[in-house]
Image (cartoon, rainbow, N blue to C red; front, side):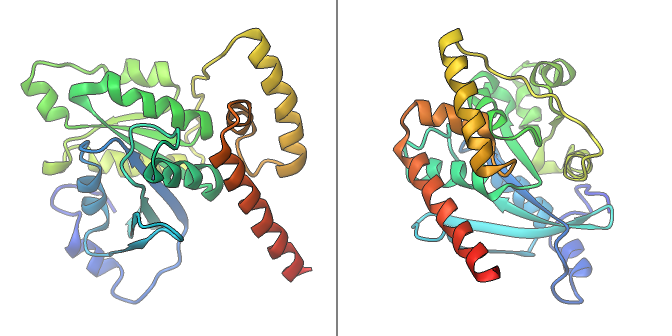
Length: 256
């Protein structure tokens, strides 16, 4: 199914899901700064096939919905709008913990084309956690009105992940966005994200911690990102990691 302005939304989702709950093929996270049009993209993709609640143990709203693209069923998780993943607020903590431990099949980071530099801070932080990223440069119509030109191809080359321009309010670019998400989730489109490198001493510490983290977690989490947070003595990450390990140990005990 293509997602054009005419085809996306409540009508198409009602038709596709009229036979009851469908199996979920892939889970997609939707991240972004506040006021980037992230909610508009979420609503356009999922239509009325969505529901809300709270994140477990938090007062932060959790919204998720489903949509179909290329015959595959996607669950879209709308993460709280945040400016960073440094856990300075409960919203940032929720978004960060989900990206690290929820392991979505792809993450879409929505940025505002009119203030791209400010938004790219979050993109770089997400890329430290996962390589399965699509950057959605939204509000491209507003940027054009302000005589701002975004070189989408050059940005994709710098970031090492696909970049899609959209104007979600009128549906521009949504079909391409949905197809690109599918390509990332199905691993048919490889990525080579840029990696922020630190000083020699820090990189040596990261390397040593990465080895220990991989022994503990295998490939279930981004060892480099966790190493950076441990070097920062980030107590919220340590608490989240301890909780995640305890839950997995309980699961193994029940299954064993």
